[in-house]
Length: 187
Image (cartoon, rainbow, N blue to C red; front, side, top):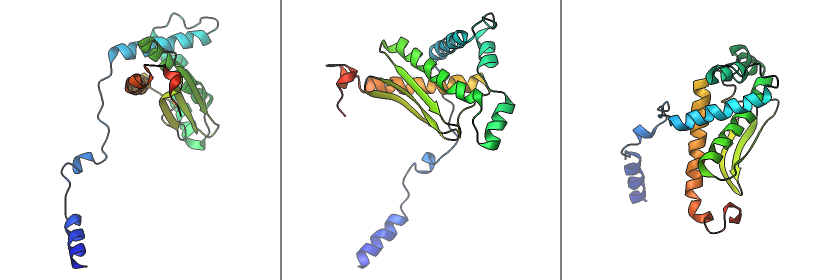
């Protein structure tokens, strides 16, 4: 029994190199791909224009249009955090952003990317981007987080990160689906 005790004592004192560097820390901001960000802004503006029936905001610049029609106010955000109910602004933001991300991915890949996003009254739900049988982006929403977005920069960075994640998944499964397409995956 002594050898085991000595081994466990030796293991407890062992320090894994680089373990301290892997501990949780604030995420380092990654440079956004400007082409992807511009495409996301353009797609989001097209979706907002589709809902602007009388064209009242059609002459606004893209970022101002997003700020006026898409972003939530600080009051909306405080209301969502206070009573755990989701504001109508959040219920509008979730599907619009996922539709815009799907459109950008369609442009980039040439594949048909579908989006579905749902959020219940308490702020729980999911956003999903998929092509055929391959789920390329799956985001769980807990208490509405990260929604509601109150700044265009955070919105665009979240969208670009999701798009890049989805493009990485499509690249990963490219070889598996090259023979019969995305609908051929079993499972």
